[in-house]
Length: 213
Image (cartoon, rainbow, N blue to C red; front, side, top):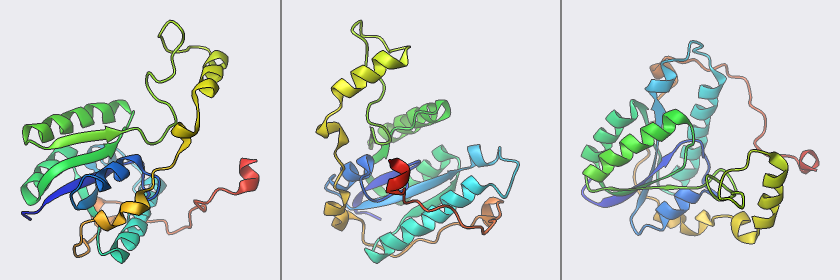
């Protein structure tokens, strides 16, 4: 594919709406192709091949695919070591930039640094965004400029800082026309990755108002 595109890399943010990284990707000025990587570095360490977490993520891929196909697009689902997958993607597509959301796990921090350096070496911009929290890293610090170690003063400072700016949603749906128009990609099966579906239903993703109250 010779057309420059933007890739959005899904990780722990499997939704189309109110997604920071996806929002910025859709506003990049290029057609956007979402991707997901089933990381063999992680999955190969799982002894239970009927792992419900893997099944849940795989099911979420199918749900995302259904919605994207309705918009004339698709999600490219891959399985393997992330660096290997990104090497393949750079050979297959003319990638202008890559967007994703911050992942705070120690393994993920190292992985993202490696991927970022690889993409930059190819002349591809790599952007990560705050998505799954209200405040992160150094956004709420003590008067001395250090992280809080006691919850109560942290909570007080958190409440002082929060406002509508931090609570706003990202209106991704306003830019859905930016998804790359392409034929649907086939989603890799659980079985081909060595896993097996239990087939039992998952709890609803909708949180009841009564529970929140």
